[in-house]
Image (cartoon, rainbow, N blue to C red; front, top):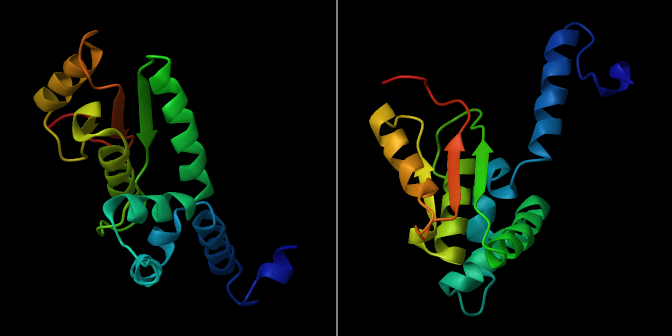
Length: 152
């Protein structure tokens, strides 16, 4: 199997790395893999409203479609949700965190979640967690990058 995937017999480690990167890409949102895809798909919409653009981005990813269904059900049950993700690679606009942030803000409202960025101070992380944990608070999602530094 390795030989069939290898594009270079002289650099098997590099070929394996390339194969693993390609495999990881198939699990990412398509906008991360090909940033030009979003503009191309939106250009095909007859009425590019915010909801239409969100629906298009959600349907472009099987994981995001499933997450949409699960989160809607959990919200209806009054449960709170912790979503952790790991940003890998560059810090372009269409990172996993940006796509998730846009999705939650548009679908559920900006007051429905607390988000901790990778450069966030510890005091701000704690404030966001405390706000999320308050029983009467409207936020029911908490998102954070698992590669957050422990102290700032």
